[in-house]
Image 1 (tube, rainbow, N blue to C red):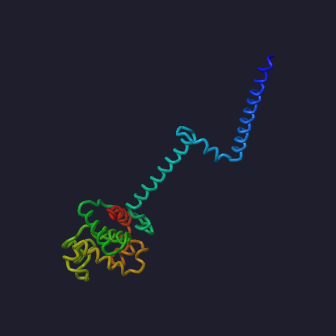
Image 2: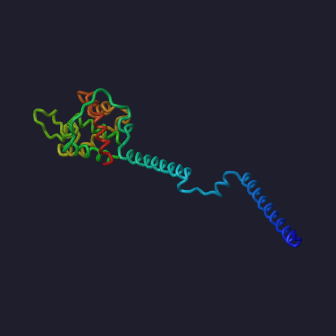
Length: 230
């Protein structure tokens, strides 16, 4: 072998060996560092791609949460649209229930009763009692004088009598006035808020048929629910 060539070859081998050892040493430190740092650092070092299974799962979770939040929001809006049944009928209805068609003048009178109740500063329960009472007394019709079919001189939505001090015929046949007059009597009844409708109504009306009001509570509650926030 040529001595000169050998002497040149030997340092190159040593240099290559040194490079290999250096690379292996760095790789070893990187491995140790990765093991010590743990998954958190590894995750930072390897960012997610939009198409990866992990990323798709996260996106799906966010979408599901968004739907759930929207559902809660929609439910909240629906709840705000109508008063709760507990506020309308706190004790539930009693006995068999009756219903009639409520449209035209009757529907307008429901709105008038609800409006007058709000104006008087009373809540949904008072409106239910007033509407239920009117359903029994006049079928929500603003009664004028009925001649022989009239109960004495009873008039209006609640069959209130001028001779009993409820007001003049013109006043009693005004839906706002007659509702306000009824509510004034209701407010004088202790505990009316928690009474069955028929008991509260009877305290004000003093009817010969004290239990007759009960049959209208369910429809009265529905009418107020549909009208209160409209």
